[in-house]
Length: 173
Image (tube, rainbow, N blue to C red):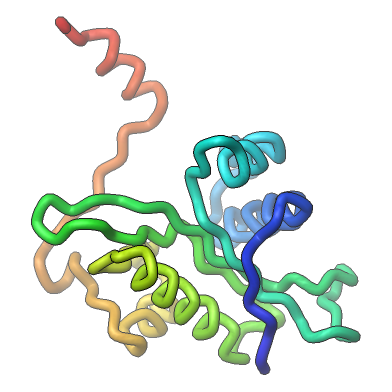
């Protein structure tokens, strides 16, 4: 199935927030842990200093999902920097609603992210995936992604907000 892959607009932020909540359920993240708000999505994506790029998968005219909408997936990306390689595109989310999976929509979104990364001078595209998500890991590998945990033994670390506060408070600068 070919979808229309298009840039997210301010008016789409409400549906993006809904899709973010859907992917959180998919990753078994409690709803209370989703802290991003509609206002934050609008400001962070379309304010004076945009923090992310987002592209939507929209059904062709006349088709809808079970909720009656036309947007069935998205890819949300930010930019990072590798001291070894230079500019990178980091895909935070690549999501397609379950009833539309297997229709090459994820492939279209991934290809769009690759096009955008090349147009912006990136040398790598990165994404993390839960190790229990075999289908997603297979999908990324099938399209040329490398599992750095398996290949190079990299481990992802995260500092949550409480840890950041404690760390910042200890600063002697």
